[in-house]
Image (cartoon, rainbow over all chains, first blue to last red; front, side):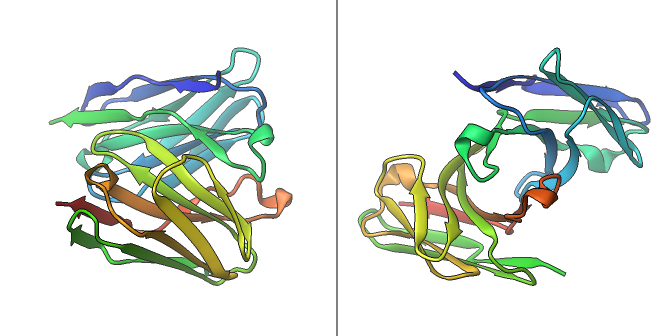
Length: 112
Length: 116
């Protein structure tokens, strides 16, 4: 079957660095995306990796290794506002029209 | 710029009543449109997607239906709500162009539905 695995919960300290991992098993692959969702809010798009390597956007970076079917989201200089759930998602061509297959989400808890 | 509007924000409906949630997109044409449902503390479940007017694909068999009467309008409906229909409903759009494959989904603000 097709699935994405990510930890259900991660705890970190304000100002620290945290890495959220995602491994995927899909029949096709057109890139790995990351979304952030605060409690009660809607998901917002963070990043997309279509090729191997690291993509950096401010304090957030995302990494992809297609040979390992693995990616991660790296959050640096953690702030309390980063407390949220983070979802990885894969574009899977057999699903048609760039549908996404979603992980179950990782709840990031930040302690002061 | 593109925006997506979804309403209402919250809804409390009795079991057996009908449902209509509406979503509209501005600033783009021919978008892919999606309806998702999210149970509390859980991931996103794709309910329906549409690649064009009148073209609806269903991912999960249930008592919900969707329609796309206009290019940028997507409606989620039910004739008779069940308790299990409670959840957070999210509309989203993405570009159809393959050249914009690195664009993420843009979600509406969501509708929190409670069936009582």
